[in-house]
Length: 226
Ligand SMILES: C[S@@+](CC[C@H](N)C(=O)[O-])C[C@H]1O[C@@H](n2cnc3c(N)ncnc32)[C@H](O)[C@@H]1O
Image (tube, rainbow, N blue to C red; front, top):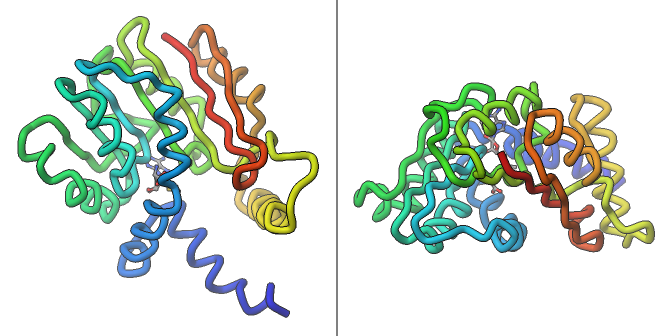
């Protein structure tokens, strides 16, 4: 009964997590940015961003990761790309000083065709966006192209096959919904090992992953170098 009542609103939220659009996207984009803050902080801790680095966040959403990355790359440059015009607007608003100072920029664009030159970044991150890319290998290829040799990529997911084998009621519910949605829409639920394999196929080296099985439905962050 509750599931039936929640179905419509949940679908609206899920569709707007994939591509925030219009008035609903504006509101849900704000909620999403707040909801992902702890995951984002956790992901960035693993990136070890240095002060002078150039960093690109793909699927930047409301620009929270970019903001936190810019606090680390204080004499560097932070860019964000998202295919949602609404999210690019929210990112600019959240980082208005960095953008005005020319230390940050946000562009509307696709993970599969990044609007940047070869070897132009030291770090590329993708937080809670990878499942939505229609061609994830192409996206990883693009991350590889825009990284300088030795640069690092990181792919972070809130839901993965790293989830705890003893899930809580909430985790069981999240897992069921995500599985159903994956079957319906072809989203990929990946393990850390899957991500490591994909990174290797895209040409990256030293791929590894860290996970937090009890958070959400198994946080995972995979990292590798060009
Ligand atoms: C769930 S949200 C996560 C946003 C942000 N990274 C965060 O953690 O709050 C997914 C984001 O990825 C973006 N996105 C999905 N597929 C994309 C693609 N192929 N190219 C660029 N952006 C994409 C969506 O527009 C959305 O803003």
